Amino acid sequence: MRYLTFSTAHDPTPRLGVAAGDRVIDLQTIARAVSAEPPPASLLDLIASGHATWRRVADMVNRAAPSQSGAGVPMRDIRWHAPIPRPTKNIFCVGRNFVAHAAEGARARGVPVKLPTVPLYFTKAPTTVIGPYDEVPWHQSATQQVDWEAELAVIIGVRGCNIRRESALEHVFGYTIANDVTARDLQDLHGQFFKGKSLDGSCPMGPVVVTAEEYGDPHAKDIALRVNGVVKQQGNTRDLIFRIDVLIESLSHGLTLEPGDIIATGTPEGCGFARTPPEFLQVDDIMETEVEGIGAMRNRVVARP
Image (cartoon, rainbow, N blue to C red; front, side):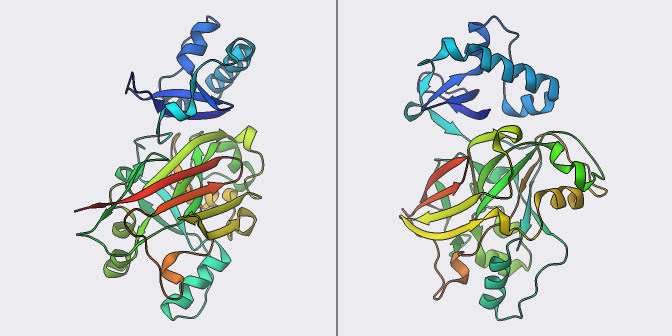
C-alpha cells in the first residue's frame, strides 16, 4: 500500500488516502464502495490500530480495486500534506551514517576523519514537519546558512523496547522521504544539533508512506537531491554505516519506540556546508528530494523574518 494524507480545494480537512496510479482515493470512499467498516481517519490512527486493521484496510482496498478504476482525485488537483502532519514526538535522526558524508563533514571542519562506532542520535521538533510540496521557510533573523539533507525515513508500526536486531524490521510499518533541512550556523553556534535542526518548517516529508511489505529491502535504495535541477546528493542506502535493524535495536535499548515514531536514517555526501566553497540555499531555490520506490518531493525556499 502507498498511503498519503491529502485535502482538496472543496474540503480543506486532511484525510487518509491511497495512491492508485496518478490518482488518490479517499479510504472512506473505498469503505462505502464495498460496504466495509470505516477505516481509521488518519495515518497515525491506522498505524496505531495494529496488524489486524492494517490487513483489513489493505484487503478492503484490494477488493475495491476493480470498481475504483478511474475513481478518486487526480494527484495534480490535491493538496499534499505530510503523511503524519503532526508527529506525537520529536523525529529521531541519525548523524554521519554514511561513510562519505562522515568523511566530508570531518574535512569541512578540519578534523581527522573518524567514523562513528555507535549511532549518533539527535532529534527534530514536531513543528519542523511540512508537506512534500510545501514551501521551506528561511528564517532570516535566525540563520544565514540553510542546508539540505536527503534521507530515507522509517515509520515504526509496532511498539517495543529492547528490540532485538533479528526482529527489528518486524516493528516497521513503512518508509517515506525526509529532508533534514539544517541551519548550519546555529548548529555550530550552539555546539549541538537540536536548535539548528528544529526551526519551523525544516522537515519536508512524504509524499507517501510505502508499507514495509511493499517496499522490500530498504538497504538497496537510491537517494538523490537536486537544487534548481543540479544534482547535489546521490547515494544508496547500501552504504549506511548502521543499517535500519541496527538503529532500531540500538535506539530501543531502554527507550520504548511507539507506533508512529519516525526515524530519519542519515544522508549521503553532498551537503552544502562541505562543498568548496560552501553552498547554502537562497530564496526561490527549488529542492527536489528523491528516494527510490517512494517518489520525490519538491520544495521552494521562501524568506521569513
